[in-house]
Image 1 (tube, chains in turn purple, red):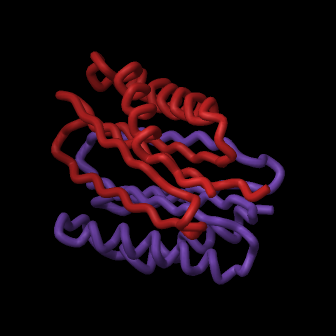
Image 2: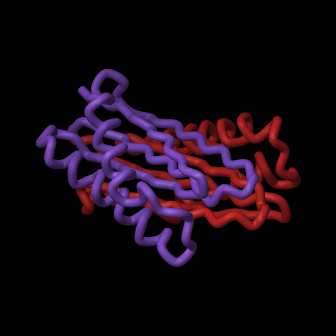
Image 3: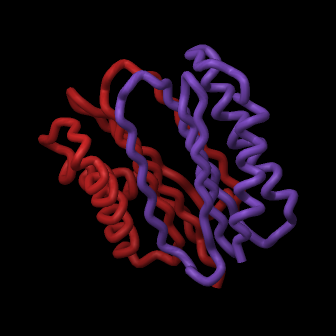
Length: 103
Length: 107
């Protein structure tokens, strides 16, 4: 079944690698979100488990606006799972969710 | 073999967003129940289509105050049967982005 702790570490590493130490920059955010999802996905597939994966990433500039996210899943509760990591620094929020569906 | 019908999903989601947020202004106290309502209603309607898919629906609602927001997603699946659909909606006071991911069940 879906190993939440393992996936959580993979996600944290991908975020730190892509945006750790950076300040929000409109011109670079596109490549950052892409890099986070791609890095996460490739590390997940390397686990070699029989799962399909979906990874989403949201990066938002910190300026006081409210942001809410929700997700709902219709799947097999015994084998499928999800893991969400919330990360922030002084200038931005980053929320990454990984969903694993057993084949 | 099944193919994910993105247009059908798009219409379902758009209706759900309109139902929940249609005439509302961003309200910090209500946003939680709005995002929950949007994902739950969308999911219910998708499941009612009766197709052999697992579904994941995500929703982000953001207050419009000039902040930049970027989202990305990447999927490792069977590209012939699985699919995704994104609906972006906005009004005067908020933005809403809903993603639907449909993964075929192999019987």
